[in-house]
Image (spheres, rainbow, N blue to C red):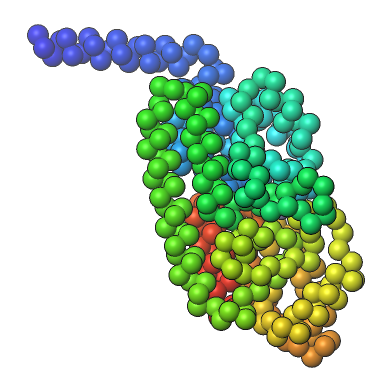
Length: 310
Ligand SMILES: [Zn+2]
């Protein structure tokens, strides 16, 4: 008798699951029941994956090697953004060419700039004056934690049924971020104080430098949409020679050409400076690798910087 009941219940459940699946092909495409989220940079997608867990389906528009400052949305991107239930982007003009698109999307769905919830007095002001801020906030773990909490709160608002899960996941993720911060602090003290100078292609590491007491210099400014000139190269070469700097770094999302010009310039002054390795600045590594996660790329940067400068 019991077996017969069980069989009946199983078939009813099975039937309704299959039935629901057939109800709309659009829904199955969205993976039944999951919140479809589209983000710009991978660092934000990493937050949503970790905090949203099994309840979200996340796509980042900007993959490995992609420069967000110059990024123009393709037709396919617009489609992904239109199909999404929620959109998370950085803001503070990181995605300089996408402002209009976000404005449009915000009329129909939660479209959230995660970096813009950080209190303004904690941000680094752009040197060009005006009211612009350095958008590369993910390099300061305490600031990035605001973004994690914002994702948690927005997911909970959108899907209150699972807010306990979002809270638990966010707590765990925030804890692992603090562990990375501790790791970074322990590693960076190995670099002699006078060698704590980080030279890269563009000014992406301002928050990183401030958080760990490293002086940072970029050939290009906060955005890559400004050209650098011979004068910028010369002034960077001057710093390298006068401070006896041993290594400079390339970035995965920016052409190596600019940094190679600096290395060449130093060579002409009889100062040998090497390329200390590739850092992940505005884009993360390949999906499926360590560096394809926020924590993995952060550790990669720390290890690369420390081994080249210590
Ligand atoms: Zn940048």
